Length: 370
Image 1 (tube, rainbow, N blue to C red):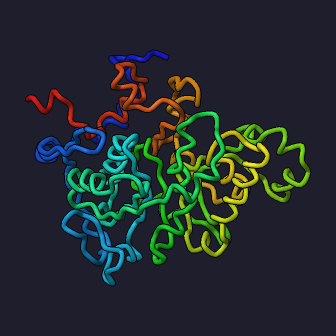
Image 2 (cartoon, helix red, strand yellow; image 1 turned 45 degrees about the vertical axis):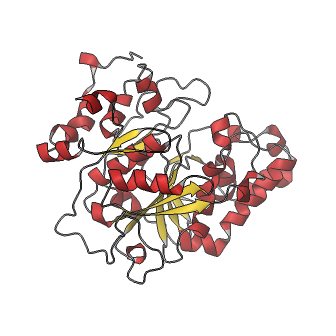
Image 3 (cartoon, one colour; image 1 turned 180 degrees about the horizontal axis):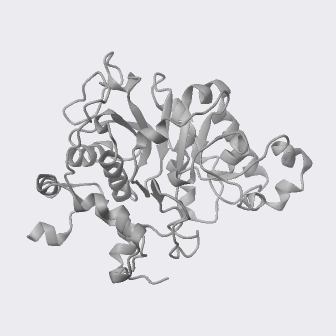
């Protein structure tokens, strides 16, 4: 694939870039007037403020001066039925991706002031610096940071095919039901290497049916057996796990989760049990994904593929460029080894990285000196 966009940019790429062609001068100015340094020494601009449409329902409660909400306040917006709850992890390695993802969610939301972010960070991370990074770039954002005790899961992690998959924070999605307030009944979980180009409220409103705990796009054409080792499939007591189910692969970087049902089904414990078995006998190779497949595959609510155009980071070994899957696009996901910010910095971008770049809030030296 040609790695240079130039005049060869396709019509779909241009359509996805159109929203940036119509930003008002005031928004563009406010997006470049402030910068904040995070713990990795990166500088980020202040994002423009986004406002609710007139028909958006009110979310009660107020944020603190730094944007963070107090989970102990009675009128706290965290417990509002009208809020759209989004959960993400925060760390220095992916903070640049997280900032772009947040901006994309807000820019394309019809009710951006009703979006509440729940950030999970390692308990050993400098939470005050992470909080300053978020609140200075998004002064009006409603958010809460939750410390995640790495030791709770580090002893259960087995080495996988890529070291980045072995980070304890990569497993925090399994503990959202324990970390978030009990009044948060549904949450959209998002990885940090993606952007939305559609209203997240549509995804959050996904019907889960009577019994499903989570919803995600399913990919039933993928070779499901490849996600587990021959040891797993040759053991009848293990392979029967999927009896009476029609399991399909799904990507855990984009999920709608019913936290009430998760808590009621004790699903965190079920995931941990599979991780404990993995420590005794190697039944999979891919980090945090297989335990989710073991517990949920074949019983999730399906979501249109437009909500996770995944794999744009290439495979787990080389991170080569990839095209979009056929069909409409609501979310682009750079899962895989290659990340758009790293390829852009190396001056070796893939064509689709140009769709991520407009959401990049990194303050460049050129802007600082101008």
